[in-house]
Structure formats: C-alpha cells, structure tokens
Picture 1 (cartoon, rainbow, N blue to C red):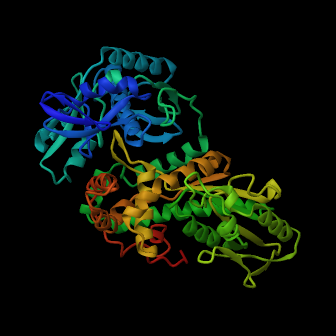
Picture 2 (cartoon, rainbow, N blue to C red; picture 1 turned 180 degrees about the horizontal axis):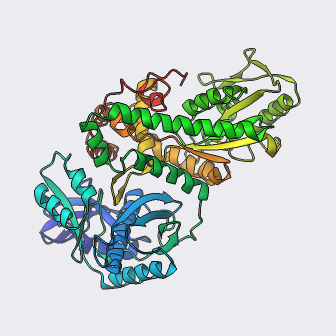
Picture 3 (cartoon, one colour; picture 1 turned 180 degrees about the vertical axis):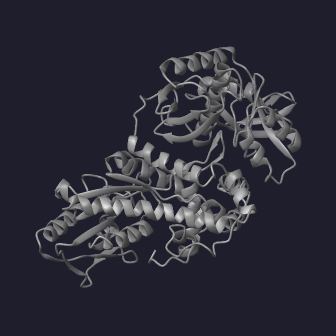
Length: 551
C-alpha cells in the first residue's frame, strides 16, 4: 500500500492504482473536470499509476495546463473522426492552422468540399467516439519504430520532425487504432471531451471549444476576418519559403540556406509595411496612426520602420509613446493584489492626451511630456511640436485601438494598426506553436538583456501581462484598419541560444521550473542559428540586440 496525501489528508491506495481512480473519488468536490494531477510536484497524466508514497494535487480544466490538455485531446478526437469519415488517415490528413477566438482553424487535404454536411458527419463521429469512452493510451516507441509508424499513416511532417530529435524514443498516443504524436499532456479517454462544436469556415473547419473561464460552455463562434486574413497571409509566405513546420526550418538550416531565407522573410515584411504606409498616404487626412498590440509584439521597431516608409511618400512622421501620458505614480490605479496596474486605461491621462492632440490638430504648438519611470512622474523638457500639412503622428501604446483613448479625435483623422507576433509555423501538422509562447520567449530574452530581469521573473509576471492583454488589447483588435504579423519564420531558432541558458538557471525547487522545462522542451525541436546575418532593422533585433532603432 502507498500513503497518498490529498488536501492535507493521508489515505492509503494499492500500488498500481491509477490517478484517474483517485481523481474520480474527488471529482464531485470539484466544479470543473480534473484533467491531470501533480505527484510530488511533477505533472502526471491520469493514466499513470501510483508507485509509492506521494502528495498529489489536482489540475482542473479551468487552469491553464488543464485547459490546454483538453484542447489537445479534442484536437486528436477531431482528427481521428475526420480520418474515419474520409476513409483513413492519408485521405483525411488535417493541419491545425491557428486559433481564432475560442476556435481552432483546421484545414484538410482531400477531394471534397468542407460544408455544413461534412462538419455534421465529423461531429456525429466525434459524438460516437465520446459515447464509447475509448481510452487514449500513451506508449514510448523507439524512434525508428515511430518513424515507420507515421510513414504508414502518411504523416511525413512528423517523420521529418523526428530526424532532429536527440532522444532515442518518442511518446505515441493511440486512439482506437489511430496513432499520433502530441506535444503535451492528454486526457485519459474520449469520454472526458464533452464540449465541442465543428463548423465549416473559409476552406476548412473551426473546432470551437470552451474557454478557460467557462470550461462547460461553448461560446458562439465569432469570425474575426481581419485576424484570419493576417494569419492567412503568413501561411502564404510560409508556403512561398517551403517552411511550414519546424522540421522544414531545420532542413533549411542544415542546407545552409538561412541567409537567403532571412532576407526573403525580411523583404516580405518590409513590403507589407510599405503597403500599409501607401494606404495611409492614399487615404489623405490621416494625422494619427494609432499602433497597438500585446507585449513583445515588436511595436517599437514596427513604428520606426513604418515611419521610414511614410517618409518615402513625402510625409513627416513624429513618434509619440502613450507611456509618456502615464499618470503620476501616486495616483496610478492598483489591482486586486494591491500592485500598480499599469495596463489599465486609468493609468493613462486620457484627458490630457486628447487635449494635446486636439490642439495639434488645430495648428497650435504643443509641448509634449516625457514620463520619468524612475520618479514616477511626467516631465516637460521643451519637446515642442506643431503640425505642418505633411506631418503625421505615429502613436504607439497598448490602448491605441481603444476608442476611449482617443475619444475627442475625429475618426477620419485616425488610422489604426494592430500588431502581434502571430504563429507562422507549426511543430508539425497537428501541433500548433502558441502565439503566447513566442512572445514570452521574446520578452524573456529582451528583459534579461536590457533590464537584467531573470527568466524566473518574466515567467512570474507573464500571467498578469496576459490578463492585461485580454482586458485591454484583444477586445479591440478587429477595430483596426489593418493587422500586421510581426513574427519571423526563423526567429525561434535565433532566440534559442539566448533563451536556453537563462531558462536552465531556474532551479527545480522553484514554482517556475515546470514552465521553464516546458519551454526548454519546446526549444529542443529547433536547431539554433547565429544572429550575425540579421539586418539591423529587423524586428528580431528588438529582442536579441543590435537594432539600429532606439528600442
């Protein structure tokens, strides 16, 4: 018998009892489904067994790791159902593209049209599999056997990925004879995946799932066309460069093609920035270019590059950071924990900003403020500005798209740009790279280099940063006139050499260790590249250093 401590109470269980059995005893006391457990601080899938005395805690669907586990399991269920409907894994090959709201956009190869009838067939097959409550099992395969298995299923993307794995084995998940590889944890059976919706969308499907706050409710899917278009453009670029997955990128690195690939990617981005500048110039009457985006989206570098492009159209851009309109530290709002809430709109002197902008619009000379982050107060240092006919203000800050931020300015004088580092490539066809992971690594590398902040500190802060984004940025993204994806197809290979050492510095005894371990495993898929050949105006330079802009 093993002594197992749960919620401070010690109980005895027979050796070999599954964590699923233990979780079932406590499920009634938990509002949300238990997805995983931690055993002595280590995350375990419910199919694992008790092998000795331990302390366990439950991870539910309303927690980040549990929610991701649900998404992953639902994706496997969808791909299996689609394969069954289309007559086998090769015919029904699916690619998980990107997330739009609570929905995951998935395309599929085959000689058929994605419509409501096909979506219903897939849903019906998913329902059958869920009702049957079929086990999702995990088995460690020698890497050569795993390669052989996925070749048989026509999953060449996984075969290519495994070429660059240093480990000698691969964990393979199996569902009713269907085999797949997933990066992360899974639920123990199909019966756990109770909430989902399959919809036709564009040229593929939307797998609509509950969000983390309401894991038992599926919100109505709301199309976000501008976001979709920005993501689709990036997919087209990836196809142009023949780099759709990490394995493809590693192939290019091994072939010595990275200098060309970097130049092509940078040129594609510069062309897009030029197109945006051209649109602004053609509109006429635009005096305020409002740029907003989440943390580490590359707003500063983008605003400088856009300004250069605007100059080619005879305009005279002037950068303004909304951070310079922070209210004095003494009156900055605080969050529920008593910490300063620099992310909320109340941290900005909105009224003064609008007064200054209106005066500029009326042709007056205005002295603009500079915020002193050391003293926590605004200062005036003689930075005066008067708008001439060809002058244009490039305003950057997290609230740039919020209408309340620029309430007094005429709509026809504003051009709004949403920028973010959106996913560009997948790990493989079924394993999407979360946008937040890329931005977290960007911020980690930059903050360590410029602010001396440890990787541990960045990981600690990230949930609050994300909370601020969810409240103050993402709700307004579709209000933008245009979206710009700042991600670079090569950047994770470039960030790897900077991120790995600082992630390894986190001690196993620290709470941030498991997130660090996850990110290290993720970076392990990539071969590393030097940053010598990166252009000095690259957005990537904002994070790794060497930028020609004051970032």
